[in-house]
Image 1 (cartoon, rainbow, N blue to C red):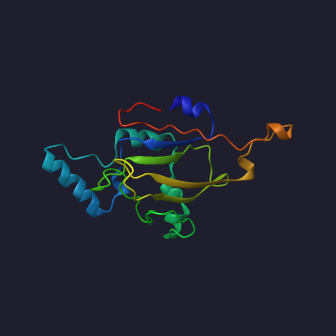
Image 2 (cartoon, rainbow, N blue to C red):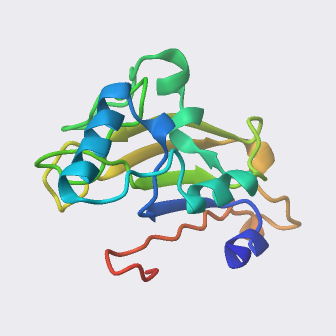
Image 3 (cartoon, helix red, strand yellow):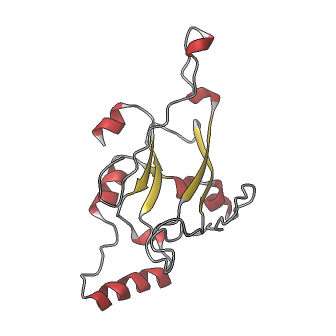
Length: 171
């Protein structure tokens, strides 16, 4: 995270292999705990240590920032196979038996509500891998664009994304 934080405002997304109870309905959380019991595993904590660290550093979960969640409707963006997640973000792992949300998109604390708006955050319910992909429709305000002296130097703000593979290595 220090490398990403040194880059300034950034977008952090990928397979984090972490979760939190607040992403689940009570029924989903019961299913997660029952799955752990069935496998002889320890029941999961309400929030993983890694997720707690992101919260402490001020990262904002794009689902909870999204207009979809705030307005309880996923109107506007239509992509084939798109979910209609508005109350909770929905599981991203195991399309054949979705149970856990471990794929996330975050905005760093430097992106305030005035400079970045998450219009949509949805899962694509397609069998592309062992995870459902997520789509984030992010709108950046003109104030977020760095001001420079020449038109050639004017660019949109840089978005820095880190995506982890199943082996835990960053790509």
